Each structure stands twice: as C-alpha cells, then as structure tokens.
Image (cartoon, rainbow, N blue to C red; front, side, top):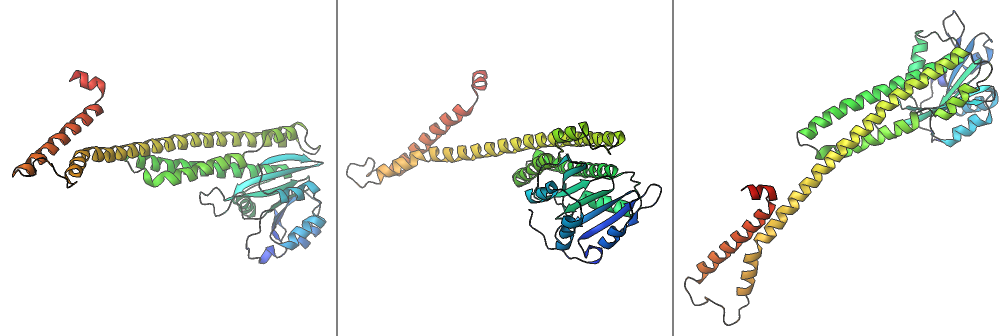
Length: 342
C-alpha cells in the first residue's frame, strides 16, 4: 500500500468523503455532503463517491457499506500498477494512474486512483490528490458536464486523464525546444541531468498511464449486462485517444534519446580534445626533460661544460628538437587526403 501523506481533514472530508454527487437525468447534480446523506440518497440515477484513503473512517465505510469486492481491496495493497479496466463480476473495476495535483515534471509524481463502477454507483478512492479526478470534480461541481450513466463518468475521467497527459507532452516538447536551442549554442553541459529526468518521466508515463489493451479488450468483448453498446463505444474511443497521446510520448522519448546521444558525442569530443592537448604538452616537454635530466647527473665528461656558449648551444638544440617533434605530430593530424593535395 502506498504510504499515507499528511492531510488536513476538514469540512466535507470529516468522514473521508471528499465529494459525493447524485446524478438524475434531466436534473442538476445533487451534492452529497456526508456519508449519512449517501445512505439516505434515493435509487434514482446513479451517485459518485470520491474518498480520501488517508482517513480511517472513509476506508472503514468502504469495507462495510461500499459493496466492493475483495479484488478492489487487494488492488489497494498492490500499489501503483498499469492503468487497466477489468470486469469484476457484475461491476467494472479500474486502476487509473494519474499525475499528482502538484506535478512538477518528476517521475515520482504519479499516483493511483482506484475505481469501482456499477449501474447505480461509482466509487473512486485515492491516497494523494490527483489532477484528472479533481478536474472532473470541479467540472461536475460547476454543472458543466451532464453525465448520463456511471460508465459515462468513467469515460469522462479517462478523457480528462488523456487531456492532462497531452498537456504534459506539450510542455515537455516545449522544454525540449529550449534545450535544443541551448545545445546548438554549445551549452550542453547544463542539460545532461534534465534530459535524463525528462526521459525517465516519459518512460514512466507511458508505462503507467497507458491502459492495458488486453484487459480493456476482454472487458469490451464481455462487459456486464447493464453496460450499453454506446458505453462500450465511448470506452473504445477513450482508448484510441490514449493511443494517440502515447504515440506522441514515444516520439518524445526518441527525440530525447537523440539529444542525449548528441550531448554524449559532444562531451566525448571535448574529452578527446583535452586528452590530445595533454598528450601534446607531454610530447613537447619530452626533449627538455630528457636533456635536463642527462645534464643534471653531475658526473664527469659532461659535454660543453667548459664552453662559454654551451648553454645557448643546448638551448638551441632543445628548441630545434622540440620543433621537429611538433612538426611530426601536427603532420600526423592532417588527414591523408589533405596531405596528398598539398
């Protein structure tokens, strides 16, 4: 189970219920402020209950009155897994991974929302505040969405998640544009860690947020009897939207990889240039080190020791030998074709 995060419980979350709404066709959503209001709600339409799992009372209510299967609570203990929609008896069970509400381009800012969908009730539960479900909550609160069925609510949640994923992909693409301009200007040292972070983010988003196609296909092929054909078509379209966004993220991964290869090539080129300079300095200093070592042995028979021009003669010899070695080294650096043309 994901560890609880510190959370200030006030107002309508006094029992772990973040929000509750009852949807009746042709009417505005009715707010269910407390679990007592949920128990007193009628059977018209369907209701949506969104829970904060950090509250013990909310988790206890789900266990005692939520009518949830063992698979739901087992999934709570599994932690974050790939997004999937499965049939669980006569209900639909979904694990929806989403980015945290305070998402800041960090691969760890991905958390899980657990969803149970039945004809008359949708239950969602999470440990951390998530963007897509909070967006859906605010849209419903303002009365901007008319939800016809419980599957329609699940479809809207998936669409909001796809939209959020698209916004993240767009922001990553914009950031890559800036990094690419910096690379062209030769300022590549400062972006190595950022490129690695963006690539990890893209890989994690693609792995966690992509709905498992096999589970979805099995669900759509054999849904519960109460799921209408139009609902199946909506879920299928939502899956196609995810596929388009995931292709964009895969393209971003390839682009980041190409930029990392370019950065690696430039770093290797700089390292080779530095190593060459160190080698050249060592080679050019070889004559003076060798001759000074020989003449510093303080033994008899050192040539030119009695000559007044001995120092200048040896200095000229060292300069000449160093020039010859430098000429030979530079000659080897010239490409063979250029040397032949010269």
